[in-house]
Image 1: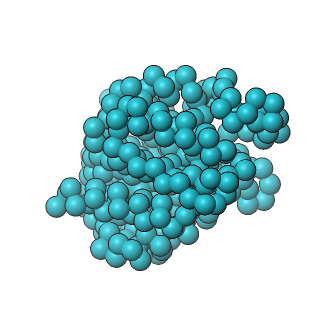
Image 2 (image 1 turned 90 degrees about the vertical axis):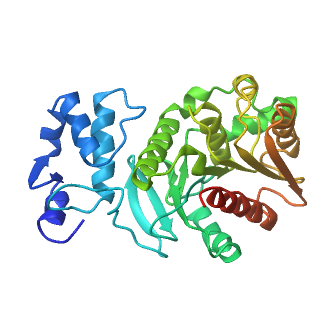
Image 3 (image 1 turned 180 degrees about the vertical axis):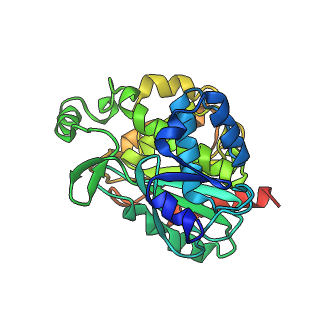
Length: 323
């Protein structure tokens, strides 16, 4: 947003369109038809939007990242971006770090941290991926989970670690997640999906240009989103994950997705999510004959260099599909 009246208006909680400024309250007072027109004028997509409050939120997300133009918004060509530096911003009411390597990215990469970590955790992978693929044209998004455990520590949904450890000791790794419900993910699943929808609209990319991934709890969420999303993403990275919702995922994975490339890594000495859980998820994807690669490594609950390389390979292959 250019400095001056546009920036001042947004700072006061106003949405600037053309030569007019609307308060957020007046925006909410508009009808669905008017809201759809505003969104389309901003070059945004109304795809997948059902409720009025979703239209309002999509407009607010777009105005946060678009330049003000005296004639109209043109989000597709005038996104205000910082290239080569991390930016902290709020998307879908989640604190995020974004990082863009090129003004016109060809790949959207969304990485979700694990239980007890924060948005900074997986951001550290950015420099390693770019060092291996310096010509990668990507926009990275690292959302932070909404539930605070303690300072600097967050979770996507409440996890009873004590109960899980008790189940592990009593029933073994195969039964660790039996009975888990995906309903606990519903809120954050919707928020991440909305972030992806908005970013695809802004960047003029297709879902097939999305690489989503996560570590530990974040990988559960990334897998859940991939299996349930209406379109096929380009890639999924599962870093120290497991078969978190066995019954539902077993049914969903049968809907073979030809275009999705999956990389999964797991430490053979993982004390948090047992290696056997990783093998159960591996079997699920292999039986469904997805485009899949499994990377075992001698280690614990961590991310090996080989899986970072594999993640970068998927991203770069998605970029090459655009050329």
